[in-house]
Amino acid sequence: MSRASAGRRRVAAGLPDVPWDRLEPLKAVAAAHPGGLVDLSMGTPVDSVDPLLQAALGNAADSPGYPLTAGSLALRDAMLAYVRRYCRAEGELGVLPTIGSKELVAWLPRFLGLGPGDTVVIPEVCYPTYEVGALLAGATVVRADTPPAEPAALVWLNSPGNPHGRVATAAEMRAWVAWARDCGAVIASDECYLSLPWEETPVSILDPAVCDGSVTGLLAIHSLSKRSNLAGYRAGLVAGDADLVADLLLLRKHAGMIVPAPVQAAMVAALGDEAHADRQREVYRGRRVALRQALEKTGFRIEHSTAGLYLWATRDEPGLRTVEWLADRGILAVPGEFYGPAGEPFVRLALTASDERIAAAADRILELS
Image (cartoon, rainbow, N blue to C red):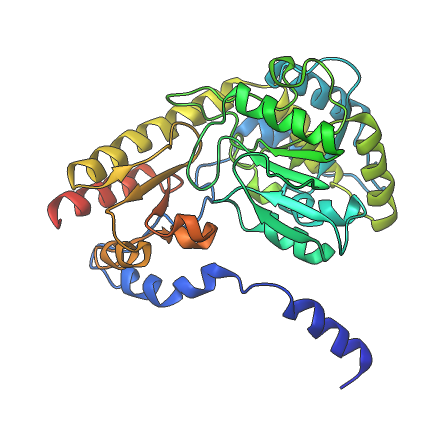
């Protein structure tokens, strides 16, 4: 074995397996249902990209030169306007387009210069890539939903939360900001589901109600995957502390992490248009009502899920047993344990199947309970 090969294996050996691979046997069970598979396991958009955004992408297709890592002037203006409008952010802001949001989540600890001896705080139940990013940097991971006793270098917040759709209050977020500033930590707030409020309205880390108008040490991560169905375009952005964003820009220039020019053009259109986002939100609202009613009528309990793209449901049994129950009915869900030990009794169900598939799932849950 070559030294390079051995090194690659050592890096991979420090990472957990991709948990969704464990669902393949249950996916086969669900797919064998006479009515076909209803896949609610992934938050992958299935609805069409709005024609306005498709046209913007197509009109920029003749882009032979290298695009700007910082984003075109039009995109930078659009990102700033969006963040000021959507997050109510004030003062000097840095903005930067990203190739979706997951790559930034995975590489942010490294980009911030973290390594062995540093601590990254992540929520008790959360998106697995927060932990993976810390592990890639060699940092220590601490799970906590309130500021811990010990200091840290980076804190991940996520509201509305994935998987549970919990909305953090402004007071809770203010407590994190005060704690982080006291110990010198950076806060990265994953706000990819901010555009999907249902029973509660989430607040951004950049909102003056949270940060008192100072974005020092704060980063907000946004994605157009759910808001605009642009998961296939890989379109995201980070905004906040101008010095931190400038550092990220320099590193991304060196690494060649550039959003393609046609995608930048589509982002300009998406960030500047609320009508398509409003229409998509109403589609998800209808799916959420149909699926939630069926689950609750069958004895499921829904916790949190007051915003975002998922229902966090339990029958007060091991989550994997519930996933098996659903798979027998042709429905694929995700056990809560994939998101941390505290998620054990829950399952996550996504609202990203078509109206027809959501209706089929609701019927099967009600008829075969």
